[in-house]
Image 1 (cartoon, helix red, strand yellow):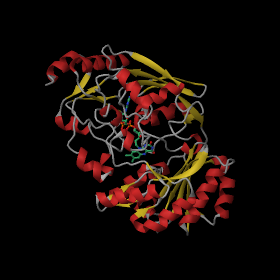
Image 2: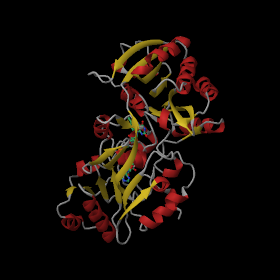
Image 3: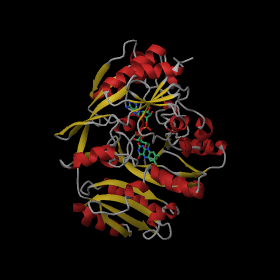
Image 4: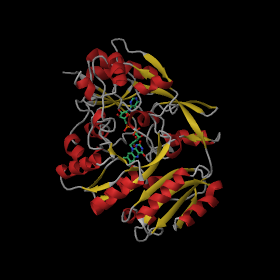
Length: 440
Ligand SMILES: Cc1cc2nc3c(=O)[nH]c(=O)nc-3n(C[C@H](O)[C@H](O)[C@H](O)COP(=O)(O)OP(=O)(O)OC[C@H]3O[C@@H](n4cnc5c(N)ncnc54)[C@H](O)[C@@H]3O)c2cc1C
């Protein structure tokens, strides 16, 4: 039995939250997009939330967790989708959002604390002509540490691939939960040991991240009569090296009918492409749109004041908007690799699985990846849909599990497991999420 009043006393000046309601709120994420996870995780909560403001304070929390063998779950903004930062066995939730210092930005690299919001960081990098290489659609509130811990890619992935691709993370500082917790630094390939490890093997306190040159970006909506034509347009745009873009998001009818704020531009929920294109690429984009008989219904310069941000209708924000109207809709995460595969699944499932695609670069090649919307009936049917995709050559990163290896990875990451053995020998971090550790 852990004596929390004593723990709070030992934490001294470090901020804590004990109020049950607040603790519960800070123990949750967006797990409920999955009806499967919703039923498993809804009652899980921490015993105490601790909010450090410096690396020194994180080190102290780590020492106390080791001393009293307290489970610890690191949390950024809690926007993860798979219960990534939900503590399964109580203990401490370590809220990193007050660790938000920008140490420096120079020569296309930023060095920051892990709890910084990506939007805040970008505001600063843009002053020097840089931006983040990729951001999730939750970038306004999500933290950079949480993106590395739990995210995969997003807006910008059409140019820079995924977070795990070599070169997208330079360096991290990590606090261990060894007998004597300490600070270590990982550089280059070494950072893969903690990249997308759900905070199971060390607390990231600081990151050095390479940036991308920024442009004057324009949001554009293009509509198409035929869905497969919109996919072909997406692929052609993705492959057009001379057109500078950072978002190619394709939506089959009737998905856009759920986008209430875009109603004037998509009155019939048309098949559409939501794009972010550099201003200096507008002319060739128009030529490509003409080639595929699309129609531009919206165009907005993002440097000007406006209420619409197309990013927030793409990636998993699409699911968010649809669920606001139909809460029984859930989603999949699929790598299709080819347009033929998209067409096959589109025709096979019809309205039961609505096709939402994001183009991104995988191993140097632009491919369509799906965040399809599924009309949920039963868990058996959902698994049947997943199996059908897998049997027919599409790769599913299952969003209906909180287990690290059962999601996108499909196999044990020996490097991450071995790193955990060193830095978290008591298995205190985000317990129950790494299958390899459970089976160890
Ligand atoms: C509507 C919606 C849209 C989304 N769109 C995208 C998208 O486009 N792309 C994408 O990749 N994801 C997306 N996500 C998932 C999520 O928003 C992002 O991955 C986001 O970057 C997570 O950041 P966070 O600060 O909220 O992390 P959290 O959810 O707080 O944490 C995520 C994981 O990282 C770990 N973690 C957090 N901080 C640290 C740290 N300092 N050290 C070690 N581990 C840590 C946590 O323990 C947890 O396992 C979306 C989610 C929603 C709900």
